[in-house]
Picture (cartoon, rainbow, N blue to C red):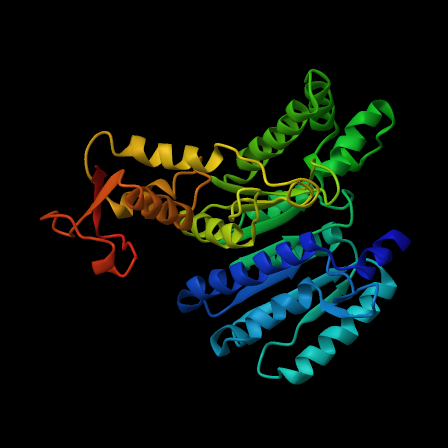
Amino acid sequence: MANDRDHFESYRAQTLAKHTILEKYIFAFFNVLKNANKNLVYIDGFAGRGFYTSETGERFDGSPIRALRAIASSDDLATRVSTILIEKDAALAKDLRESVAEFYKANPKMREPQVAQGTFASELTSALDSLDARGVRLAPTFLFVDPCGVAGASFEAIRRFMANDSCELLLFFNIDGVRRIVGLKEEMGTTLAELLGSQQRAAELVAAVAACPTPARKEECIVRFYDALIRKETGAAFVTMFRVENEERRVTSHYLIHVTKHAMGFRIMKDVMWDAGKSDEGMGGLALEQASLTDEPMLIRARWEGVKAHVEKELLAGPRRVSHFYETLVMEPSNRLCEKAYRRALLELEAEGKIVVLAKDRSGAVAAARRAGTLAKDYYVRRA
């Protein structure tokens, strides 16, 4: 527990990134659902104390307050969204209640947030049991699961939660911790079994990772295993993974994993993550690269050129409506690119003279100056 408390004594770049993604996405998520639902729910499974304190004493809002701020910023959401904040540590829960009470006092029009002291699995399971006993369906809910480490992120609780309609998950998956646990093999305890839902699955992952020849392949194996598992057990077609790099070494520290059954949520989350991402190519993306941005000069890689090559390939068959890139391709479950990435690629290809933008009726070319440098979805594009 002391380690959990120590976690809140610094506010890191990766913490800012995940909180920014959380705050921006839940605002969009609830606004999409508010017109068809009088009741919406936000659950933070590992809420902490509500704030972080830096080495200099500066205070930063934690995930509960960031989420409450997004909800309170809209009168429609403030009166529709119920919040449940779960924290197992008694001292952290006490601070959390005080932080939340202070926020609620300043925002009395919103529904009063509820703080529950207990483990994520026990509190969520108890809530779902209560709904089942009363024959009541869970309202559309967004669940944030951000443990300090690996322990506690119960797969069974997540699976049962995701069985409900219009429910989504954002999980901070500690792959660095998973790698260490997998390496312990027979001495790894029950943490991995809880994360995967059974001891058998844990054994399968250990065996699969052991067969991988390189650290990169081992990481890929772990990620693919969890991705396949959560898709199969929840029926979610759309899983987005945001890679978080270690601050000091070029290895992955965490993955921020978003799980949804809805293409619209998948599309919106990729845009939100793109804005929060940073790459050694000087742009956004589904990754926060830290060590590679600080310890050496920027590298020249072909990744962005690969995106543009992909766009050009899509145009081999002839002109395409821009919406083909912004909507059709973006909503394909296997596509990691977002609308913003496609827009940037198309505009760069146009500036390089490799594609031509056609009028909305395809009657002729429309120069970038006439479009004020923008590219709406109802234009057409073709190879030059």
